[in-house]
Image 1 (tube, rainbow, N blue to C red):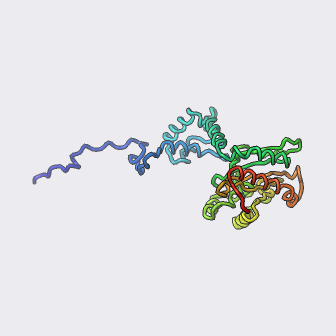
Image 2 (spheres, rainbow, N blue to C red):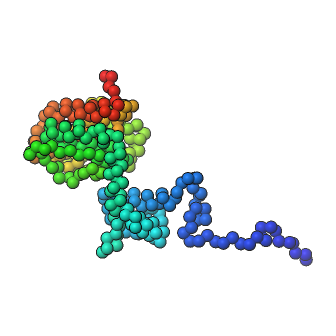
Image 3 (cartoon, rainbow, N blue to C red):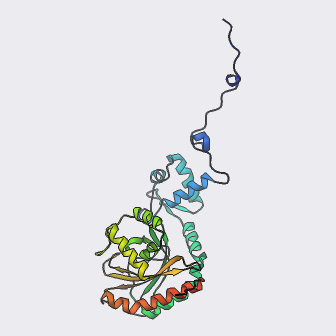
Length: 294
């Protein structure tokens, strides 16, 4: 029986098997788009794994968060630690965010146009009312504080929530967050609420989706949001929107009052503070180029 000559395919030398942990198609993944760095993406995903509720993580925790094996995760983590974006506890061997991340966060906040324009107005509102004033933006289902001002008066009250520039809170249980959620497009709002655990944080937290949607509709209608002990016992706050030149709501400003300082009715709080709050947010909005023709 005459044997057939080898086909061109069979005559080629065998291809070497891809090394373990190889990236791209060799590891069974689709090729990435031109100009896209998968290594950079992985490094950023590792940094994003840390949060206020998960400030310290080990290699195994990080590997599970980003879907990488232990050895690959370690290489990324070691590089980030060497560059100062992560720091390792010598006893537990676990990691937390490093000082370089803090520097980046403050640089990002300070680069926002709104932070350059709002500071004097926020301080003026705090001095006028005697209460803590804050400004925040929406980031997913959370708010992020861009600025916080306290009055120089002796009776001004530190709220004790350990909040500072860069702090995050769930949007649904804060006056700032309700303003920002209320002005989202309907589809985006539904997606954000779906991602939110409406857990009870204070004695009057709204924990029912339908009730929250009604409250947000009221905020859209009135232009003012109220937090009456929804975030923490004894804490009330009012918030109003800040708009840019297009009319879009880009931030919110609030005044926070604790019942131990002023145990007044909600109506009294609204009567005294709503006017100065609206005037301040209108002032900041004007500096951002917004023009009201109402």
